[in-house]
Amino acid sequence: MKILFFLMLICLVPCCLKAQDSTLGKTKDQIRAMVKPYPAIKLSPGDNADTLTMQGDLKTIVFYKNNVCYGSESILPLKLMDMATQKMTKDGYKKIKDNVWISPSGVIRVELTVDQKNNVFVTETTRADSTGPN
Picture 1 (cartoon, rainbow, N blue to C red):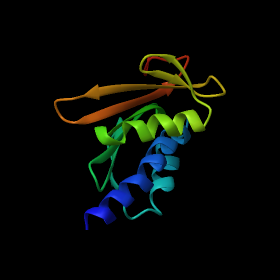
Picture 2: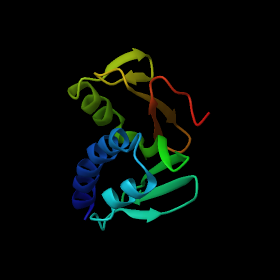
Picture 3: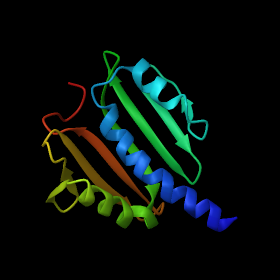
Picture 4: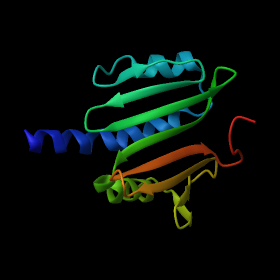
């Protein structure tokens, strides 16, 4: 059972990271339609944010302003951080600071924050030229 659980985590982490890229600039309806075909992802809709929850303590919060996604935040088990950074490197992301990565196009910014107390790390994804909904 533990092996199956770990294999599922390995499969879902790259999807989680990739999903962050593909949600920026999309409408709430577009994002909800993207998630709908995946029964393993539980959608908790909200006015200014949707929460996507998956098995294995994986959670992504998608933030909206004027019905359009301007950023997302994923909470992942700390043991998967190396896998996440390797995936970003493989996808051409460049490390610009100790915990900040930028996409090959220079459009997407990913900041990784470690929460040792809760044994997780948080990936905050935004447009590189934006700091939030303002």
